Image (cartoon, rainbow, N blue to C red):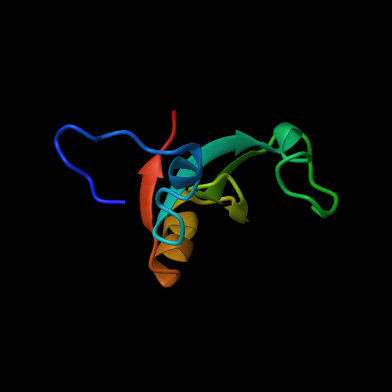
Length: 85
């Protein structure tokens, strides 16, 4: 679809794939909130603050106890990161 100044709308399908494979978001999370986001996650201590990297579509990519390691994981996968507050 060609974009013009008059036609700046996106379909829901286009929006769903925006940033796919190129953008990821970094978010500080509590270990208490990870069960639903990281399927198959093993036993983890409650109350820990961790860094999670998610694909633009919300799929989990990695989990780390250090922000710089999560960012390094994004760089290794050629992903541009954005922070979610």
